[in-house]
Length: 252
Length: 235
Image 1: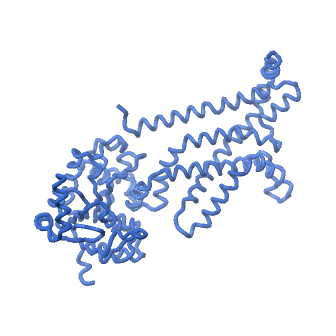
Image 2: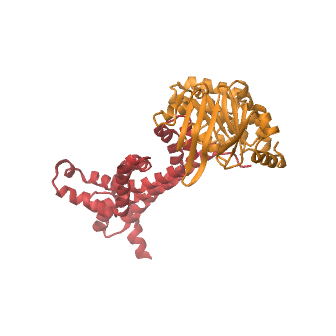
């Protein structure tokens, strides 16, 4: 395994099954520091599962995953400590409905990083200012629009100062007019050098921010490369079919 | 009709009955308050135990399930007899030398903890798994997730059914009379023996009702205020 240390994240031969169903099949993938990798592919192709394996929300059946020089798949890793370094944002936001925006953002830093209430609040205000929602600090999530909720969810993940962000179709549950406010925030994260793995259906966005695009099909990475190559001259027939369907649907 | 009114609502009887029943009813209130506090705590602990993950916690979970199955299925009056008469007859030191009031508390707590455990458990299971997932993915531990994310949401949801069980408990404090605790029902019995009137029972009934109604309204208001604060406004 030469060169594993050079990559910030590397997956080797990752396989995941749910009972009989093979969801991931021998995935090899590397992500360098400050790199943005986009995962594209149809629903059920394994994008979400792949992300969830990286922060151990799913346990892989075979293969190894190394994050920041640490092998996380051998069962000896401190799961909670690992997750504090890796932020994940979900399609359905999953904010805590009984807490205000401020409480949502400060909970984990206070409980797991030992920040005082005042420190956590100061940090949260900075984050809220950055995402343009400072005036919503004391609102409950249900009072916010979907786009606002998703931005808060991103801020909540950022409050842990993660070194890696995993974004799982973060705009798929949003009304079309709310998509851009979330994508703008992700774009800003990319320009600040955040290492990210992004599962997305927003092809033009992927083309714009990604350093590398991976096309997943049936639990395998069928094709990967720079966005221009994948979107302009895909090598695989399946990739071409997938992109053709996307264009047909007016999403590229 | 006149006979009925005389027996149950005799004006002269009322004047005497109210203080006497009130005397007993204070014991009902004490039984209720102490038992409810204990039930709230123990039921929550057992509900948490029932939800523990992993193979190694199976014996604990089995114990919790055995407990709820047994005490939910056993009549309170039977449990009260066992504690009020059976346990003292054992002459087993400390546990056999408790007061009747304490045996009453133990019986009520054992039976109602079993009910309320199930209420809590339903609440905990009603919190969507994605909430746990979100909390765990932030690096919170299992216990922190339970404490800050799952339980607050679960408990809010079960307040109405919890209240229902507590009204049941309030009424069932009257059952503790069978082991000789002098509470409202016992006093009503004494009263009817002394005066050949049933007015004491009417008074006791009114006391029980008066106790539960403000409790119910208070809970309604609590729920409404929370809705107003946390939910999006309907237009």
